[in-house]
Image (cartoon, rainbow, N blue to C red; front, side):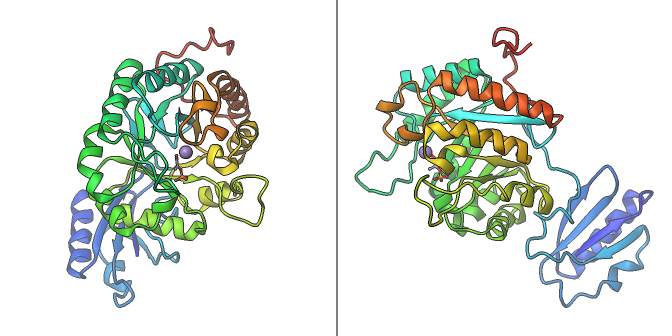
Amino acid sequence: MMIIMKANATPQQVEAVIEQVKLAGLNVHLSQGVEATIIGAVGETHNVPMERFERLDGVNLVQRITQPYKLASRQFHPEDSVISLDGLSIGGNEIAVIAGPCSVESRSQILETAQAVKEAGASALRGGVFKPRTSPYSFQGLGEEGLELLAEARELTGLPIVVEIMSQVQVDVMVKYVDVLQVGARNMQNFNLLRAIGATRTAVLLKRGLSATVEELLMSAEYILAGGNTRVMLCERGIRTFETSTRNTTDINAIPVLKNTTHLPVILDPSHSTGHANYVAAIARAGIAAGADGLIIEVHPDPAKAVSDGKQSLKPEQFAEMVYQTGQIAQIMGRRLATSRDFQLVKNGWA
Ligand code: PEP
Ligand code: MN
């Protein structure tokens, strides 16, 4: 249920309504927008009559949220959510480009990649240290040693780091190091993990499951939001279809659908959605044209030697070209890329 306060409602009136929501046994989620203060009353609301709140002082309107996801819905939070990461804003007018290797392999590999993606205009660095591999015999990641290396790369470049978390037992070590916790496709419905992340205040990149619907993705986001962590971004990374010419099928439709149904930023991963380096730039361009708030791209200094996902990894020069192209599309959309703080547009032929 949403209780929309009058524009001139006083803080005391807002407090009094919150008190009543709590007395009704519901959880309070306050959203103070530019237009209005909205008090979300979340929980078993079906037995609670709307009239209970309608007559309270300062209340303009009480509405039921029709979707099964409440806090994630645009109805509850009409304005776009903007996630701030140390100078970088994701979800506003600027488009974030997160780039880096599938896996952190060595000190030289991650430092070299971090420098290269920064020079090409990336706004954040990705790298996996706990890898969800299909085979138990494949490289599983460097673990905490990899986190140390990513922290060094952040120190060197100033780029915030995005790293996949696979289990709730990793929460403590991960929040010490990372700026964004990535929840991988295979863990989208690991509800214990989602709850554990909901209890942190670290930003989250929640990837869509291999065969999850948009609504299921939003219900997973709701788990994190319900825990009080509002810093959630969603990621379309391709879904399984009958088509085999690409690793997955990019559900480009999901981008405008999500932009319409939720206020959370939407990121596209054309690396995993296509599975081929040759197709990544085309789908990245399509994603920005469709309204995505950011991209996450796999980049490796020598893709042929990558221990995971080399086939879909861009070389730094291919990545630089993709950044340039998507930057042009962003301009047509009235937006701009959020390049790293000291990125030189002139040097890269942008101005
Ligand atoms: C990854 O980002 O390297 C990854 C494993 O992605 P996904 O969970 O989308 O497969
Ligand atoms: Mn990968």
